[in-house]
Length: 135
Image (cartoon, rainbow, N blue to C red; front, top):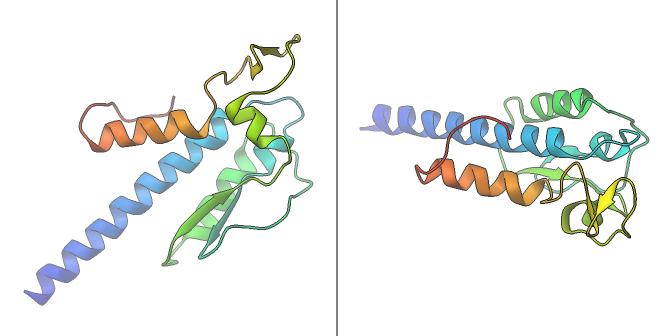
C-alpha cells in the first residue's frame, strides 16, 4: 500500500507540475508585446510571490519561460507567477484610452486578458470540456 501511495503521489506531483508549466507558459506567451517588458516581468518563484520588477525585455517570452523550468525543477511548495509592473492590471482588465494599440480600453493583442483566459482554459481541460494546448 505504501508503494502504491508513493507512486500515486509522484504521479500527482508530475501532473500538477505539468499543468502549472502549461498555465504559466500560456500566460507569458499570451501577454501583449510592445517592448517586451510585460512578458519579461513575469517572474516564477516557489513559496511566495516575487517582489519588485525586473529590467528584462523579453519579447518572445523565452527568458521568462526558461525561468519557470529553472525555478520549478525539483522544488516542492506552491509555485507563483508574478508580474508587478504598474500597468499589468490594465493589460488584464482594461482601462486604457482608445488608441492604435487599444480598443474599448483593452490591448488589441489580448482583449480578454491573459491570466483569466488561460486559467479558464486549464479549468475546462481539467473538467474534461477543453482541449490541451496554448491559446
